[in-house]
Length: 325
Image (cartoon, rainbow, N blue to C red; front, side, top):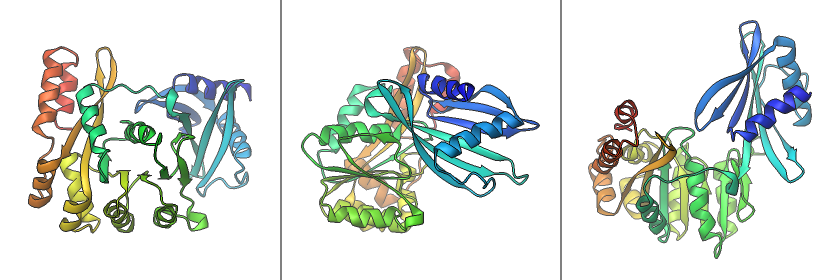
């Protein structure tokens, strides 16, 4: 057990977002994910891999005898006398009934390393939160979308009530009223959002808009005077509008309820990683909604990257990789 505990503690020390216990050929691999980059940190025998999964399943109050069907669990992990981390567990078996597990680490907001590349962009986004309406965030997994929303909402929580609806809760924040999706209890995004509206919060964070009902409820909440921060899957800022229309939100309601769009990437700069945004708001956003254009990244995004390249803050290879989003 000490070996398993050491693997988890080292992953937490390196601020990994996830730890993967995966069957590979005739053994198990242990991988961590730090800022979206996965790497193998250890290899275990099949017996050790199964023991590690069983250890966390037991602690996470999961069914020990089930090795194929998906399961979820959670537990409190004591890192030290002064530090406790929430762990979210997910298991599933492959077609050969070999079980795998992913452990998600839930860090307090204050402990998350987060650096903005262009402070003026942060000022622009902060200004958007002073308005009511829906602000949508897009970007690859691991780009820091949830952290961005939480940092924005943390300032608002000093004077207003912030409610989050997530699947699962990714960051623990005492200043917010945090709700977690539980499909088994018939408490999905739609049900929790309806319940949330009765709690009369000033601001919502929705972990992900993934279906038409949630999209329409988010717009309704925005139109009723709330600030709603939410993530949505899209390849770029312009694609967010197309995605919302695909989910059944009509152009009229997008004009009325959508305040801004923020697409973000975690840039691998020479002196460390930093977040860069592509922000749409005001007249530019209205034009995108009206014309329904899919144009890749904005000219502002390309200009920011070009400036970083001229400053030699980013390599040529990363510039070419990121200039299209």
